[in-house]
Length: 361
Image 1 (cartoon, rainbow, N blue to C red):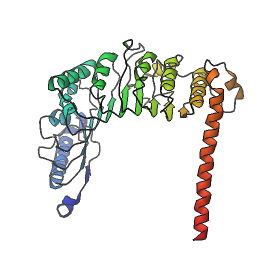
Image 2 (image 1 turned 135 degrees about the horizontal axis):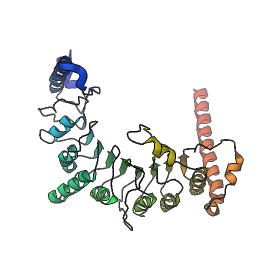
Image 3 (image 1 turned 30 degrees about the vertical axis):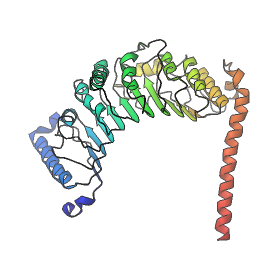
Image 4 (image 1 turned 135 degrees about the vertical axis):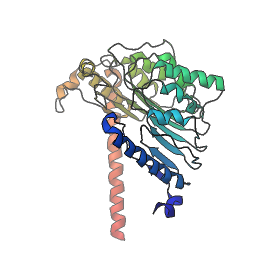
């Protein structure tokens, strides 16, 4: 069936196949045979634009894929061969996932940061400082880098300082519009942060942070050059009970900020990423919740602050907790409610107009 329609295939995707050492020789042979068939099929799809290969321990394709714009690869073997073989010339989006513990892969894939066509890059693997340092040195020696518009770095538990991380992000400051750093700490000690360091990223409108950095790290994104519209603060264990720096970040972007989300727990509560002991020790207090909610309302920003464990939905007394941010919240609270009501009224008007149009027809 496929040969007749291969030229019309635009997307080619396999499922996730995790290598299992206990599968036995028969299982290994079956996996490799299946992969061989998949590669034969992919070779026929000369116009394919999106490719996703989930075979962890199988080879990267050894043939050209000239039309491919999006590619997702899993496994250290695939990743190691990526830069040794033929990278599609029109590749704009690349997703790399290594579920195995293999710190050596980080340095091997560093050349992808130089691809002149690449605009969107997502990497999930163990990341240590060597990964950032190696990549920065390569970019500096090459004198060029990919024109990344979005960069997502997702690691398992690690230990970093802000110097190498900021050095890498800064290489893409002229083009970056969306940044996601999910870098969970390996223990309950906050990482080092350099004082008075600040990003200048003139096109950054979306920021996602979930890291082991202490609260002063938020100040590095307070530059007025950043037109921030969406701020997503994932689980940052050292943020809670010290939200002043986050409030400073919110206020710094009052002119552009549209949406704010602040988490109270990890998205992935796997203890391998976020130890349960850490989740129990570091979590949002009711005071944090009240303070952040008041500030967001005062700024007129659409927001979702995850409720702490002691939150009670119908407890009006909760809002009587003293807040350091009350002085700029009262007028803002009215503006926020009025803005929200206006939005609902506009929706109602549109529905009524739509109903009248339908009736007249």
